[in-house]
Length: 208
Image 1 (tube, rainbow, N blue to C red):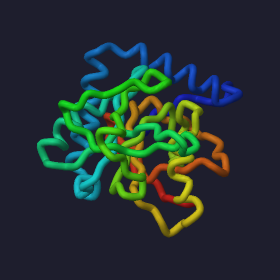
Image 2 (image 1 turned 120 degrees about the vertical axis):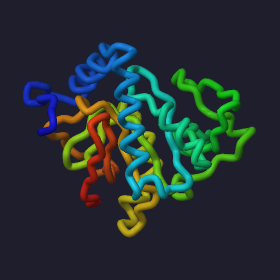
Image 3 (image 1 turned 30 degrees about the horizontal axis):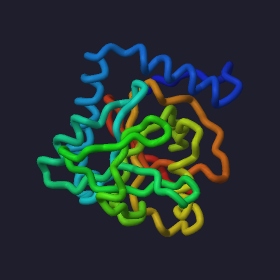
Image 4 (image 1 turned 90 degrees about the horizontal axis):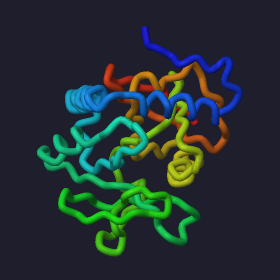
């Protein structure tokens, strides 16, 4: 039976974010590493997911589940990997630049490392097969809570406007304790297709 962080006494998303981020940061390095390895294994053995060719990931911060073990395994499988980057003049939407291990990254205005889009031409989200997404919390209905900036929701809004367009697949990547009983979904929230934790993979019914 999955573990849920109770949210009844948490009145708003700010409280949920604070509680889960604190729990993430409380993990030891070994716990973080073990969770990351287990989650990577669950991805690799999933036939549906591993078929993806163009895969976007992220660089972990603030106790997020680290996709580095997965990145290393995907590179060995000759997958094309991409990282998100803020593209100027796009209403704070994300574009994605191909990632190579020896690339020199730059720091954006939020202190997050990202590719230099002047060196590697970025591509839009719909050109990808799959995005592995960071998150703060998720529900069993596939509702995703991010950091509150709305960057992924703005970037992927076309999936709400064109219900037949579900590319790329949106897969959350998180510690299992980031699962909560329920999350209210706003009209602009783009739901997940599935989530991977150290406990395994869960698929959600995608309804716009």
